[in-house]
Image (cartoon, rainbow, N blue to C red; front, side, top):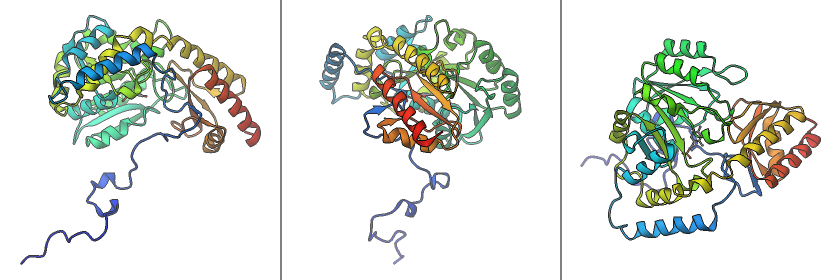
Length: 373
Ligand SMILES: *Cc1c(COP(=O)(O)O)cnc(C)c1O
């Protein structure tokens, strides 16, 4: 008798004992710390919870979905994509809209369809810390071209980087995370025209941009290889609902349909997202307050002598710190959780309610005094 290939386990396997893909060895699961502290300003959520009326409609939608829970959901999420198209405007139809469990999953679909082994995705760093992980998970080579010192994208350098690397996919985040920097449409056009493959403009924070900031949605009719992603997680105050979406040509959407898991969007997700969308005006009502909170905070931080990156999003990147971790920890000790992300001398704080902003300012003043920074 041959020896069994796998001896029976005598102890629970440790991760090190399992035949993990080599590039995943030593990797940690992504995540900003989820800590139970009084003031959470670390993941750019909208701090205003839904009203009783919105909660009631979401609950009713979930209950209706539950009556057919024995059936698979609509694989194509037609009704939801129809609602999203209407919400986006710009003459878009459901065929030009895609939806998934957060725009994180949308991005995974993009790299599943257009990235892969032997292919590459290029973005402009510092940028969203999740992109390299989607690249890794889809076996796509990750390339980061640098932004200028003020975190803007220099059009000539961007085009040069694209011509040098010939990436299959380009991600442009506008407004960018963690810097808050919006990208001009003229720069986007040069990037799209230089790119040999597809270009995705991640507009997760678009609703927070200053009035009159044009959306890359305007460029869609001219560029069939362009896609624009949005999310209900930030301005829309629906991070817990997990709904992200994309607008592009119908052919682009068809490509994503090939790689999605069957039934990737649950009936409950589709139903509650539609219920939330029906209350778009109310859910977005605090965006103006959050923009004001951001601008006030930027001015306050500048007044305290910090460097502040110009932001069109609902957060501020500020610095510089010789030891940013000590400042982050000091704030946490005062009950305020912000984010250690981006360039290593900087910290990011989300715009919040007046109470949250007061708590943050008070804590930062204390930490500054305690640490003499
Ligand atoms: C928060 C964020 C998203 C949204 O992620 P969801 O999966 O939709 O919650 C996408 N892109 C950027 C740059 C973000 O910061």
